Length: 415
Image (tube, rainbow, N blue to C red; front, top):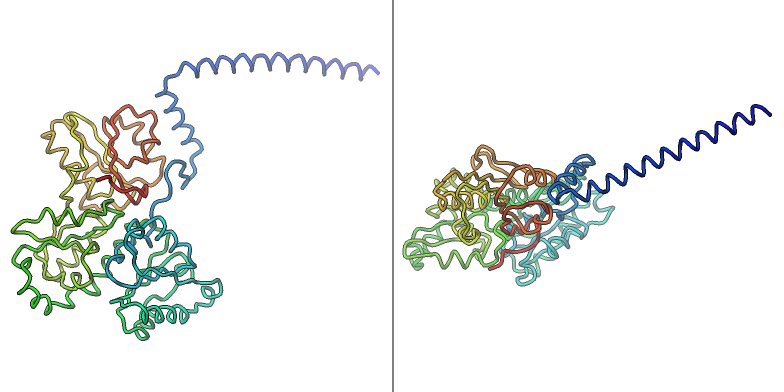
């Protein structure tokens, strides 16, 4: 009995101490709430960034939607060239290309097909069924080539693209291009592979006809400038070819590969006097054409002035986020306007950053948190980026300039 009373007394004491502790916690919590209420919006934003960093999960994106993948970039290169495009998938990747990643689909159709792979087709490697489907399509469509574009499925089962190419060429009598995209990379990687495959296959194949056509074509008397890298993903403008056409004069003629310039123009690419690279994904192709045909190239974007508003850029710290060539062009134009008067300009990109196009301090972004921390800690006065990134930096006090990047937001630059 005595032990029972001792146990009850101990329980009562612990309960009383617990009540006191709870009251202390409530008081502390109340004071914490008051302290938080007094914090400025900027402090709250910093705290939120710190919280996100504490619970950082690699690959977790809370504000931005997934970027265009490599198979979409490859399909974009071939879209207007008059070929049959086969996305080697079960149907989902083709739906994404046509429904989301290719803005021209809603106004200008192209012969894009899904391989329609079924589970057992993929497991057993039934390439003959894909060849039969492509052969049937080639009999019904007047195409000058066909391109087979990879996705995660053929990457997982190690599809032999070289063998697939030989089988298809034998049955269709068409040039067959294969691009070993795997759906794990971003759009620019697919574009780079597609541009190289395209020009290695066709460039220089029709020089004789080019000489005949040049006798009747007034543009042959002008300096012919081939424009490499024109896709909606990179320039975010469906009217870009028209802009190049309007900028021509009595001395220059632009050949916009991939936009309004068909496969015949690709075949005569070796006769161009110079190439202009407007996206980093086309840089390797420009190097190939220089090595193969001696065609010099320049890197730049001639319509950059349309992207830069009239602001005071002197003595400002500026961040530019886009594909590398356009971002570099914006940087150079800002330096020109500000006479480089203590103006610090940094270029960053979610996509490929070529070392020969980079300056010291340029950055490659891998995660959404990289961007949040960069803007929050960088003390930038002006940020050039896609509008969809504005919401990631609610505490940013500087000027945000919207420069659309279709591969990021799926939105085109307003004319």
